[in-house]
Structure formats: C-alpha cells, structure tokens
Image 1 (cartoon, rainbow, N blue to C red):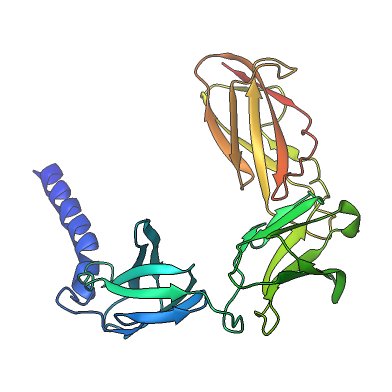
Image 2 (image 1 turned 120 degrees about the horizontal axis):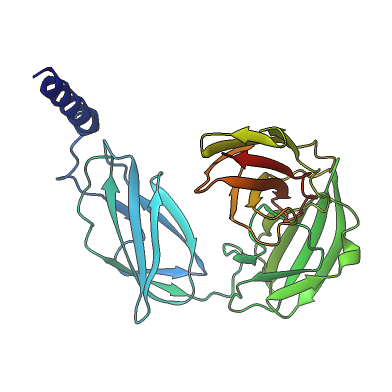
Length: 318
C-alpha cells in the first residue's frame, strides 16, 4: 500500500508540474491579432517591407507566415516582438499571423494580400547578404562574398574592414556588376575580426550598406592533456569516465573548442571502436568486453583548426 501511495503522489506531482504553466498562462484562444501594415491591397515599392500589428495581451510570441503567389511559403517565423522586417522580390504576396503563449494560441487572421514592386529609388531598400554567414569563424583566407541582386541597380560597392584595436579599411571596390566578389588571401594579413559591407547604387540613389562580421582564426588549439583515468589502470566496471584538459589558446581570435574522444583496441588507432565529440572536457563510455583499450583526445576549434592528438593512454577492462 505504501508503494502504491508513493506512485500516486509522483503522478500528482508530475501532473501539477505540467499543468502549472497552463494555469499561469492567459487563455488567448478567442483573441484576434489586429494588423497595422501592410493592409489588404497595399503596394510596397522597393524590396523591404515592415510587418506591424498590435500586441495581444498574454501573448509571448507571434507566428508569421508569408506566401508568394504561384510559389508557396516564403517565410514561417516565430517573432517575439510586434513587428517584423523582411526583404522580398517583386510579386504578389499574402501574409497571416497568430499569437501564442506556452499553453494557448489564437487562430491565424484571414490572409492579407499585398504587392511588391521594384523601384528606382534605392534609399529605403537594402541588400540581402548571403555568404559568408554572420559571425562565422574560419581559417580560409580565399573568401567569396555573395548577396541577392536588386532591380534597377547600376552596380554594387564592396568594403572590407579589419577590426583589431580600431578599424582599418583594407579593401574597397566600386562598380561591381555581379552579385558576388572574391578577395585574395593576401588581403587578410592577420587573424582578426573583419567586417564586409555591400550597398547597391544607381544614377539617382543608393541603399545603406548591409554589414556582416567574420572572424579569421588560423591558430591551432593546443594539444589536450589527459587527466583520468591514469595510464594502464585496471578497471572492473565496464563504464569509464574519461577526463582531460585543454591547453591555453594563444591566438588573437579564439573560437569555441570541440573535443573528440577516440577509443581503439589498437595502439596505433588504425581501427576506432568509438569516436564522440563534446564541448566539455569529459565523456563516458561503456565497454562491451574485457581487454586492453587505448584512448586519446583531439581539440578542434570553430574555425576547423585541429590540435595534435594527446599522448595516448590505455585502460584495462577486467
């Protein structure tokens, strides 16, 4: 009977923990999202449209969907604010939105139609950058930059800035006729944060610069140092926790480290029994049979620089 009572209590606790959020959340099921713009039949000139709506009391976020006629869904995003700015090409579109919280949600509003039309005036438009992605870490210095094209453009301007104890423009190129630009490795003379910017230009107007940062990191992580278990230790349980330490990163740009643990029954690691990665300095592995096994660790940073392998150790599973 006591065991049954304990199970009952556990079920009640679990029910209350899941139901608590429902109790605390405001029921918004019967509410409606009131949109501000774009309204039905709106004509938007350019490529940038701002979606606005009134906040719904009790809502934590909003689900917005944008579709293009004869193409389908373009955007399906969850937004925390009551506005959303997005770039779209010329064409006919519809958008709809609903409010959500942890426990409840409203219905979508009836789809609202609007039209995007190309404009000669670039002032309120923007260039959509494609690659490299924002805040990427890389050890590659031969970079190709790409962006989406705009209508009614004579060309694009590209600026490349090194940000290291101040900002220095290291490359500037105007009148680019394509939607891509590559730089030679010699332009990047050291590890640093670099900012690349693109703007579109025609005879009467220009867009603001669209900017992204990237980080050049060419310094390899230091060799990891194994800490436990000690070499040649005999272990009776088959489940072993491996621990190690990373050395200090001497590079100017230091990206996140991922450690890869490798286990083999061959001292030369010609065949791997196990390989797994972690951002921590510890991993657990359960051996399926007795014998002598070898383990080592390698560190890989966010720019894909790889350290030397640690000195290998052995464990004897009894």
